[in-house]
Length: 91
Image (cartoon, rainbow, N blue to C red):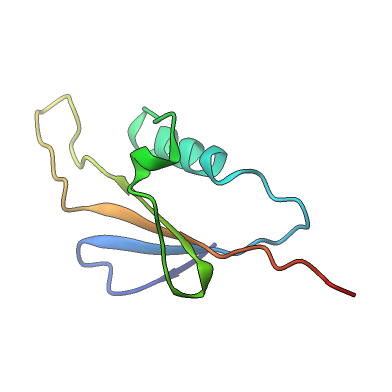
């Protein structure tokens, strides 16, 4: 996973397959969301799923800075995650 961008209101992350059989996108998203917010969604559509140029799959995870303990919810700060497609070797 690589980090890019200004980091002003979001953290742009790009996940690049490093093995021939990566885990499903949903598992990665759920683990990341559970780690940063303590919850996790059950469908990729819950992560704002879209397809970007180059076949990248795009998702986002809202980060609630402050969280439920002080009622501060900032939905403008989030993880913007692109996952590059796995290229199959045709040889």
